[in-house]
Amino acid sequence: MRIGMLTAGGDCPGLNAVIRAVVRTSRAEYDTPVLGFEDGWSGLVDDSAVSLYDDEDIDRLLLRGGTVLGTGRLNPDTLRDSLPQIKRTLERHAIDVLIAIGGDGTLTAANWLHDNGVPVVGVPKTIDNDVAATDYTFGFDTAVSVAADAIDRLHTTAESHERVMLVEVMGRHAGWIALHAGLAAGAHMIVIPEVPFDIDYVCKVMKRRFQMGENYGICVVAEGATPAEGSSMTIDEGEIDQFGHQVFTGVANAMAVEIKERLDRDVRTTVLGHTQRGGTPTSRDRVLATRYGVHAAHLANSGKHGVFVALRGEDIVPLPIADAISRLKTVPVEMYDEAASLFG
Ligand SMILES: Nc1ncnc2c1ncn2[C@@H]1O[C@H](COP(=O)(O)OP(=O)(O)O)[C@@H](O)[C@H]1O
Ligand SMILES: O=P(O)(O)OC[C@H]1O[C@](O)(COP(=O)(O)O)[C@@H](O)[C@@H]1O
Ligand SMILES: [Mg+2]
Image (cartoon, rainbow, N blue to C red; front, side, top):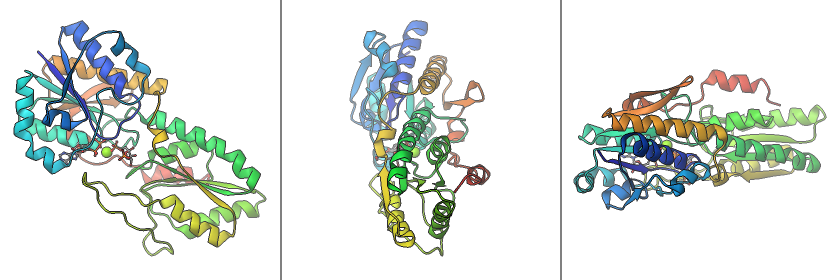
C-alpha cells in the first residue's frame, strides 16, 4: 500500500496539521509510505513528488501555517484533459489511493477523479467554511479569530476620529467569516453575499447611531457582497479569471465612497485580505485538522474510497464526496436575521 497526498486551492491554517496526522498515522499504524504531490493538482499532472517521512520535521508541522506541499490552482479544463498524465504519475509511483485536501473546487476535482477510476479520499479545508455536509472546515476558526481581533482594534481608532470604518473580510460566496467575526467583535452592521445590501439601509443604520449620540460605526463586509437589484448603488463586475473565479473589484471601498457622500462623515476602509489565511492555526483548527488527518489515513489504509471526512457534531464520519459538492454551504437567512437584531 502507498498513499499519495496533495493540497489544492487557497491555503489555510491547519493544512500542515492534516499532512502531519496522515503521515504519522499511516507510518505508525500501517507502515504505509506517503508521497506528497507539490503545488496542488499540477504536482500530479507534472509528476512533482516528495516523500514524507514520520520524522521530527513532520512532527513540528502542527503549528505551522500554510502547506509544506505548496498549493495552487489549475484551470479545470486543463486538469480534465490531463487524466492520462495523472494516471501515469500514480502508476509510476505505485500509488493505491490519493488523499486530496481542499475546498469545494478541489473536492469537485477529487470526485471527478474517483468517477474516472482513481481511488480518492477527500479532506475539506477552507477559511470560507462553505463546504456542504460538514459542520466546519479547519482554517475557518483561525480566520474568524484574526478578523475579530482586527475589528476589536478598529473600535478605538474609529471612536477617536469619529469615523465610519468598513472592514472587508474574505468570503467569496459565503458570509460565515463576516457573520462570526462581526458578531464576535460587536460590529454595528454586517454585509454578506447571501443577502444583497441596500446602501441606503447601511447609511440609515450608521446615521441612527450618530443620532443616538454614538460617534463612530463599524461595518463588516464580505468581499463577495453585492448591492441589491434596484438599489441606488452599483459596483463594477470583475472578470472571470483563468481558474473560473470572479475577480473582485473592492466592494468595501465602493461602499465607502457612497457612505462618505451620503453621511458627510469621515470614512475609512480596512481590507484584511490574506492576513486571515496566514500564520499558525488556532487550537480548535489544530484539533479539527488533526482529527481529519487521522480519519483520512484510516480510510485510505482500509480501502474506503470516494468519501471525504466530515465533522458531524462531535464525530468525524466518512460521507460520499458528492455530498460535499452538491451545493455550497451558505449562511441561512434566519441566522443573518439573528445578527441583524444587533445592527445599529
Ligand atoms: N469543476 C471542476 N472540475 C474539475 N476540477 C476543478 C473544478 N473546480 C475546481 N477544480 C480544480 O480544483 C482546483 C482548486 O479549486 P478552487 O475552487 O480554486 O479551490 P478550493 O478547492 O479551495 O475550493 C482548481 O484550480 C481546479 O484545478
Ligand atoms: O487570493 P487567492 O489565493 O486567489 O484566493 C482568494 C480566495 O481564497 C479564499 O481565501 C478561500 O477560498 P477557497 O478555499 O475556495 O480557495 C477566499 O476567501 C478568497 O476569495
Ligand atoms: Mg472554494
